[in-house]
Image (cartoon, rainbow, N blue to C red):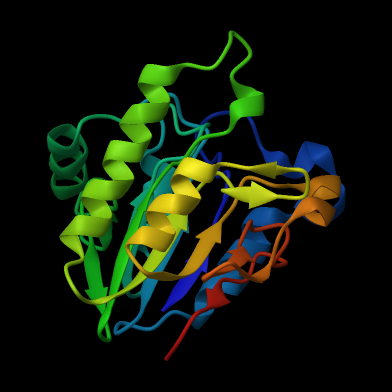
Length: 226
């Protein structure tokens, strides 16, 4: 089982991340090489910011890129996934285009080797420029709890797009839910470049945290377990 966030694919729309230079130069080729480790029996959780496409149609080439690799891919929403749509529309689109390895991690949970894989986008107070949107925030908490409840009594791993904590910041409501439901490890993305130094990794409270943003991992998926 693997985790990777922030692939920021742009195979149809003209918004490649190469323009940022540094680690992002040639990032699609780096992703292709990094994801070559996947096998049919594997599961890869993609922690948001998958594609710059503004619609399912614009993201089609990016979905095809991911679907071409072996194994199951569980996709959760990031703040830049503007293509995201209702579960029915996304599942129908993927089925119609033969993307059989792609699945939503959204208000649900999946199993891998005795673990329950749970998750949602999460929330970032600092990015709510118009003032804290309580309604949207509460909806994310509801989605996370629905996912954790769907896991039942299985050992739980949690996948988020936004970090629930980093240096100088915590989202206590999300952390409390993870601790209440016995989450063992939390994997998150969103932090890039100089923000990597703010990441909280390792055990904090009862949860172990891991940053899995693609540029932080040199575009290689993080192996969670065999």
